[in-house]
Amino acid sequence: MDTHQYTKKSDTAVTTPLLPKAIVILKKYKHNPRAAVTGTVFPVISNQKVYAYLMEVAEICGIKKNITFHLARHTFATTVTLSNGIPIETVSKMLGHTKIATTQIYATVLEKKISEDMEALRKKLG
Image (cartoon, rainbow, N blue to C red; front, side):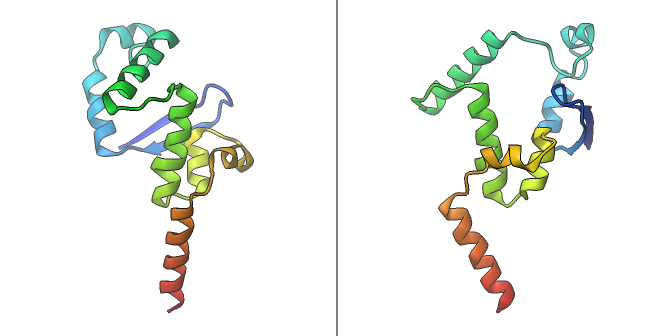
């Protein structure tokens, strides 16, 4: 299943294939009356409520850091995607960036990733 959306900030068309858990979440909210009223996929909540939920998740996970939406986005870009071999061009598109340079700000290359990439190259070259 793919989702077709336009980013709000840059009005860029983005098509994103979804992972199975994301599909389950979308199906859960498919007929949500609050989302239907606003014409959105999910019910709209305030920034204050988003941050309250982020703090709750941090507490459950034992994270002592102040978690923000920007930090969550940065973590997605670095830890979830780039560290798992997703190319920066793909991550850039998923984040709705129009320039790779914007994504490179998120893309602090981890030592582990460098080692894995070099090992993969070593295997390819025999």
